[in-house]
Length: 199
Image (cartoon, rainbow, N blue to C red):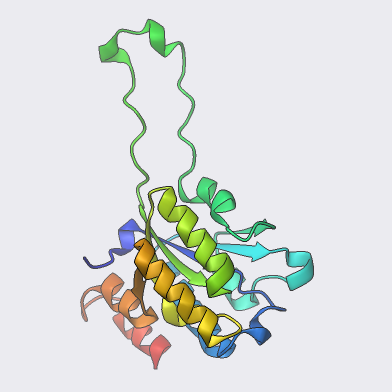
């Protein structure tokens, strides 16, 4: 199964000023997150972000922050509870007394979210990213993790997270895999822009 831009939402987990210098290969991880966010904006894919205790770890990287529709602060390691209202806004409350209406006049149950695939990238892979991904899987989202845009302080922790995520049912992909699947064709109007980002 290939990724489709119109079925995706991008979630950027904790790319914060005081955390990124501690992340192994942090500069490359951040570069790939910026590439993903820029492409997401071009492709009209919603971009959300989380910040873990921002008064202690600082704000989201400025270049990422301007590409996000919303940034949600959190104290829990999993960002699922603050992300859920963004990913799938609650259905509007029914009007009137539905029980008193004949069945043919009652409104059908709300449909599943339009964009059921959540693309996750972030730090630290073995803590906040992992817990967010597992909670989103439990909530029945289709979760894909962009490995080269994720990091931890150690390679061992990062790799352990990838093993666990794959075993739990997450798809593991790279930034370029996402980009080429979203574009789908060298004739796409954004193809040359994408080439410029990844060179």
